[in-house]
Image (tube, rainbow over all chains, first blue to last red; front, side, top):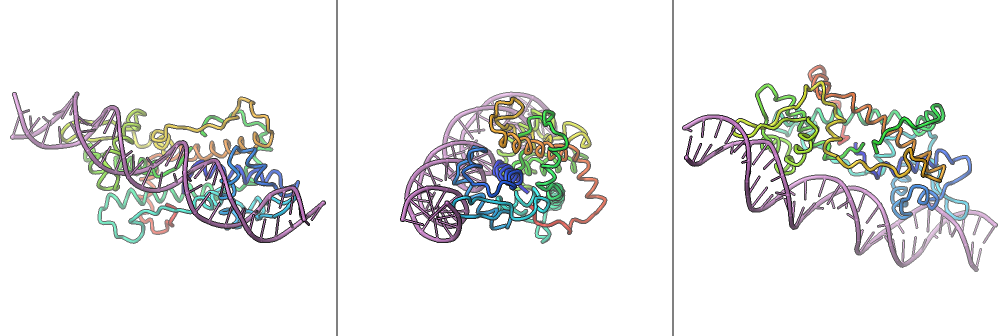
Length: 146
Length: 146
DNA sequence: TAATAACCCAGTAAAATACTTGGTTATTGT
DNA sequence: ACAATAACCAAGTATTTTACTGGGTTATTA
């Protein structure tokens, strides 16, 4: 589980689709404008999102992107995993080919934590995020965590 | 809140200190060996950890590093924040200088999520991780989440 | 048939990550 | 006193990831 600005771009873009899905497909040009990301970079991200069935693309005028599933069915974890693709696994996971006991322990502990983070993010759907926002109304409390 | 291999290195290294703190200070050379990270890179990471009071360094023979606080008092979030240093804040947070409504909403939603992730990781201490491991004993269930 | 917008790909610029090298300073045991 | 140890420090480089540029093509709509 990795969390970078790349993942942030993907999540915020998906949030736009969630919010604007009433008014038909959203073009990447619009998202590019809103999020200050280059169109072509967005295309790359959306190519991955599409491969994973998270979005549907419609060509031609009036086209754009829509969510590939219900917003309740799309987790934050699935979005981040879709654009990350590379999963750098630990050398000594499971296979017992790690001869240093200490190393194994710390690596396993990290895996455990990593698993917890994944589960946490997998339980947050796009719908959850939007709902919460509508409930609380304001977001002034938020601090600068990037 | 960012989550990369850099943070992983820091967390696993801190876990080593937690596990081995009975037998006195742990040298970076040992950690370098265990975790397959260059000594000098570890030095950089530990310089940051030290600045934040998370570790204490002892020079000379028999020296090394120890935790700067009790393992119950050191959260995973604090470790990751210590080595990350740069926090790339959103342009339009709080200040209301964002003229596009859609942009504001999605950015705020991201901030909200980011805050949730931070809170989650801030509630997991080094001690928590070690305890959990001792309880369950095995980690075979863990999958490849990196 | 022209405009639109997804889709595709190769190359490059910029930034973050990780390492290399070559030091100095404090501490310990001989 | 002094040699060994290991933290501490800094400048430079290699590598990888992130992000962008610019060139397309294909499908769809009016």
